[in-house]
Structure formats: structure tokens, C-alpha cells
Image (cartoon, rainbow, N blue to C red; front, side):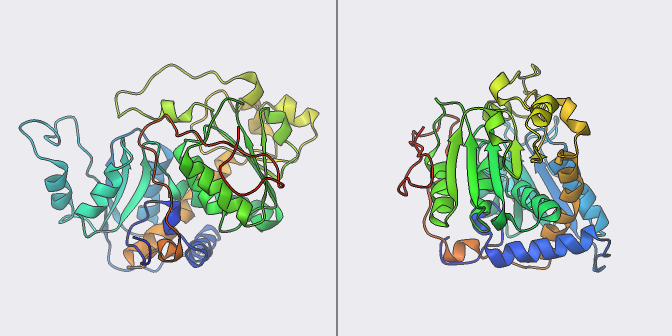
Length: 353
């Protein structure tokens, strides 16, 4: 797909700076109270194989505020999709394509969302594909940062989470469009990066961002922004609807953020979390002025309104039209080993743990 614009938003790679500026301009207008232009109502299909609160409801609300309608096109408990005597994905999606104008999909497996996009002439938005990507979450995260703190290129950003988490990969890729002064990964020493995550870090380094790695959340509190989620996100989000592990994951203390740690450090760090949280972001943080994770939820609506409005108007994404070939999404939760280098003096290349 390199060398051409695309109808679908499947990866942060699909977005270029002009796309980003357009989405943020539209989202800012919506967030400031601008009323959307009323055209004919369209039908948005939601195809969700995995649990979702913010993404599913967020797109539903965004579509409604734009004057559009939403229909659930997922496989219901009584659906024949994928069953021996039922219909296959191809027939299901081609049928849905006759009813809808756009599809938002969250899939269990990485490759399913690309297959779905191939099967339909409709624009498709990736709402999270296994351990692949979550591009609209990355748009929400960057928009929230710029609304509160201004130009990301003047800031320092830390990321503490499982590096194979889909929101993390999209976040790192999108940061390369507006590279921060400093970027720090907070990971366990034994954690290795997939090739695709290492390539995203290499892009940041090549843009002049100072890259660092730490293994304690306290070491991130001198940054302007901290995006935090559990270090085990990929394993937690791996199941289908109805198959999720009900056991709450307990985060290692080194990667757990509490109000006491923030106050002791006298930190002004902006605390972000794509949610759902586990024990990595203690609820004592909620009352701090630093906390921005429910602000992310609020601002996700104008961002998703902006994405929907441009795609329903036929606007394409230009990111891949001038991007180089990149490593593919990992197909399993066991990332390929890539060393991670530390600090700005390291030569460009894979990151060393």
C-alpha cells in the first residue's frame, strides 16, 4: 500500500502530518462547541469481537452527535457467523456493506481487520485489532496532550505499559509526526520489544528525540507527560467477548503510580491512561490536578467526530503514500527480540534491554 492514500484507518502509519492537523482542527472546533454541518444521516456499523466501553460507546455517541445512526453488526450469540452451518466472514461483511456507510471494527486477531477492509468498499476504522494497533486512541491521546500542554514537540513524554499493547504502538508511531524533546520507556529489565515497536522508537530517535529507558515509575515523574497502563496489557485484552479473565491483575509496585509518589516527587506530570485501568494507576491519583484520563474520555468524542466526519465525506488518509516499508504487526503475544538502546548517544537501530 506504500505510495497511495487509503480509504481505511487501520494503523497510525495511515496518518500524515496534514491528516493529523485536519483531525485536530476539526476536533478542537467540536470540543469548543461548534455544531457539525448537517448532511444526510449515514449508518455506522459496529463490528466488535472484543469487550469495549470507551471505544464502542465513544463512536456511538460521536456518530449520534453528527446526526448519524449506529447499528451493531457483530456476531450475536444467535448468529451463524463462523459456524459450520452458517456463513463466513466474507459473506457477512459483504451483506453488512449493503446496509452501512462505514464500519468500526474491533477484532480478536491482528489480521482480521485488514481482511475485513479488503472485503468491503466501505471505509473501515480499526478500533483495536488484537495486539496490533488502536489508531484513534493515539489520536485522542495526542489531542489531549496538546489541549492541556501545547505543542508536543516542546515536551518530554514517558510511556509505562506493555510495549505490545495496541494503544502503545499507535501512540509511539503517531508521536513521530510531532516528536517530543525526550521519550522514556518504563519497562521491566527483561522486557523485549517487537520489531515494529523498535522501528517506532528508531523513527523518534531519527527525528531528534532523546530516547531513554527506566524500570521504575518514579523515574518518569520529572516528565511533562506520563501515559501509563499495566505491563501485562496484551495478555489481558487477548480474549473474545464472554471469554475475558475476570481476575484483576495486580501490578508490580515499581510500576504502580500512587498519589503519594506524585506528591513526594512534587511532580507536575500529566497522568494519562487509555483505560481500563488495573492496579497500575491507584485511585488516589484521581483527585490530583495531574490526572487527565477522564479528560481523555471526554475529548475522545470530538476526536472521533472528526475522524467520522472526514471519512464519511470521502477523505482518504495519506500517511502510507510517503512512508517507507515497515515491519508487520506481530501475530502473537510473544514479541520478536529486539535490543533496546539507552540515551541519545546510541546509534540508530533496534532498542536494547
